[in-house]
Image 1: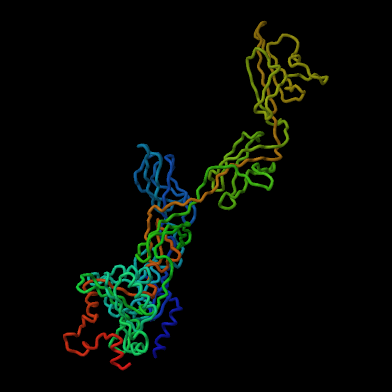
Image 2: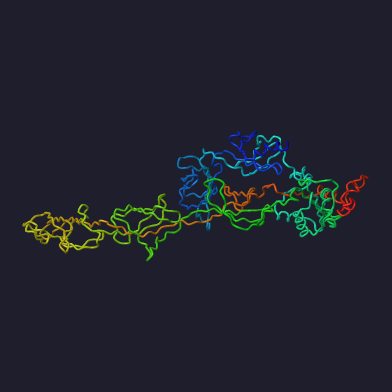
Length: 638
C-alpha cells in the first residue's frame, strides 16, 4: 500500500502541468515537479508572458548641439525622439516622452545639463525604452524552484511582477517533510524565540560553530555515529574547543558494546529502541551558568554525508553573465562576498561597441604592406572591410572631375549613414578635350586684344599658353586681327582659334573692335577653351577608417546584490551568474539550525544529564536517562 501511495508522486516528477487556483488561467502558467517526498518537492514555474515586460534602461551623453534624437536598439534599431525637448536649452532633470520613428510612445527620457567651470558642456540623457509588445513566450519565475507547501500550494513570482499563489494539481494530500522534529513549529518570523537557518556548506557550518561560546559542549542524538558525524564533531572541537558527546538509541548501543566505542567516554545511550535519521538532533550546551544563548541542529544530514559542493565560499573574481532573455547585451560582473554569509554582490559591466579614431587601412600580402587599394574605372565608390564586427560596406561619393593627385579627400559613410572616416582618392586614365563643355572667359572695354594669354588650373593639366590665330583659306594660321576687313568701321567682330604653342587647337575666341575716335579703340572679346577630360581606367584609394572597439561600461546602479538562484539585475536587465544556481536556494541537503534565547536555551538545558526533566518526579526515567555506553552495556550484560 505504501508503494501504491507513492506511484502518483513518481509519475508527477516527470510531468509538466498547468497550475490551478491562481490569478492566471492554467494555460498561462505551468510547472515542472522536482524532488521527492522524503526531501520535499519543488516546482519550476513558467509564465506565458508578452516579451518586453521590462524596459531597457541606459545613459547617453550628447553635445550641446544635440537635436533631441537617440538611435537605440531595443528589440530592433530605431531613432527615438524626445517630445518637447528644445535644442539649445539647458534642462535640469526634465523628463520627456520618448517616441519611435512611427510616432509610438515607447518610454521616457530624463535630460540633465552637465557643467564644467560653471559653463554647460554636455547633456546626460537617461532613458527607459519598452520593447514592442505582442509576442508571448514562456518565461521562468525568478524564484525557481519554489517549494511546494501543504496541500500542493506554492507561491511564485512572474518576471517583473508580484508573488502569486497557485496549486499543483494532484498534490492535494501532500505534506512537506518537517525536518528536525523539535524545529517544526519555528518559523523565520519567530525572532523573539529563535533564529532559524539552513546549513548547506562547510563554510556555513564553520560560521555557525564560530558563533558559539568557547567551551560549550556539543551533544549528538543520532541513530548511529557515522564518519560524517565524527567529522562534524572534529570541526566543532577545532573551532569551539568544547567537549563532544554521542547519544545513540538502545538498538545501536547493543551493536556498539563489542566494539572500541564501549570504553569511549563520549558515547551515551538514549532510553528508546531506535531513532529515525530525520529526527537526529545536535545540541550545543553553553557552560554552566553562562548567560550566552544555546543552539541546536537537526536533520538526517547529521548522519548522512550531504555531499556539499566543493569550491571557495568567499569569491573575488570576474565572471561572464548569462542573459535570461534574448536581446540583452553581453555582460560580466566582478563578484565579491561570501556565499555562507549570503552577502554576495556583483559589480556589473556591459559590453559595448564604440567607434575609434580613423586610421590607415593596410594589410600584409607576404612581401610588403598594401595600403593603396585599386578599383576599376566603373567602380561605384563602395568597398567592404572587416572593421572589428564582421564584413561591413563603406562608401564614398566619387568626385567629378576625377582627381589627378592625392590632394582629394572624400568623407566615408557606412550602410547606416554613420561617419566612418575619410579616403584619399586618385584617378588614372587617358586625357581628351571636352568640346561639349567649354570654359568661358569674357572681357569688355579692353584697350588691347588678348592675342596671347595663359590660363589653366581648372583645365585638368595645369597652366597652358595660348595664342589667338586665324586660319586662312589657304590652310595656314596668321595672327588674329589680320582678318579684320579693310577700311574704317566703328564696330566689327572677328572669330579666331585658340591655339597652343605646339599647334593644338584648344578653343575659339570672338573679338569685337569698337572705334571710338581716331585715337581711341576698345575691344570686347569672349574666349572659350576646351577643358581636359580624364577617362578613368582605374581608381587608387587610401582608406582611413574607424574600427569598432570593445569597451566595458559599468552599470549605473552598481553594486548589485546577487539574488536567490544566482540572479543579478542591473539597469533593469536580468542575468544569471553561472555556477550559483543554488545560492540562497534550499537544495534538500541542509542541516537545520536554530539559535536564540530563551527557546533554544531551554531545550539544550533540559536535554543534558544534569538538567534531567524528570529529576523531581520520581519516575523511573530519571534513573534511566543518558547512561554512558560502558555502564549500559555492563547493566545489560553485553
